[in-house]
Length: 219
Image 1: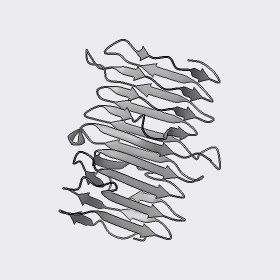
Image 2 (image 1 turned 45 degrees about the vertical axis):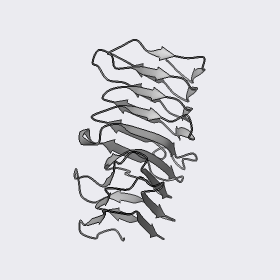
Image 3 (image 1 turned 180 degrees about the vertical axis):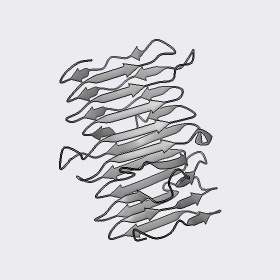
Image 4 (image 1 turned 135 degrees about the horizontal axis):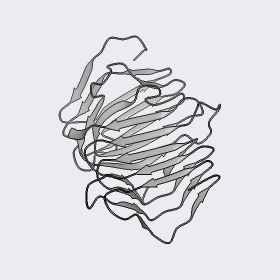
């Protein structure tokens, strides 16, 4: 789907969605409403980006338990305008150009992340990762590949559970759980920041297991 295409909806009510492009995918609204598949939605851009073209309207829906959304791009995923999602599990791999930006909307509830990687940032404005959960908990799955980018921002309305390694190669790592009583920031895997590291768990004490926290600057 080429950049510049008007907003659109693709819905699979009893199956999966596969979108593949040599260049960029201009993403409207894609739904796999009853799929618990891995992947339920798969987006692949071999030499371009996956871009949001519908503003604040939702982009991806696959919220059945077990459904996985897999995104592979070369030049950014929600870079400059985050993708709005209501999905169960995210697996996203970006190349060396552009950023990864995901907002799990409040109606989507909890979000599991199997992988969010932008491992070889090309320039000083490439490789940043931001994942925000507006209405539930965010879990970095211990069965996945963790999160790695130039800088990393992970924010949850409720619990933030870090069960696999988080790496900010050259920039800051900001981990923020919710502010209500009982909201938990729980870290059971190593966290590394090339810059500053910020851990915020306003609602409950921060829980840190037998792990290593490493920052190039301040914690």
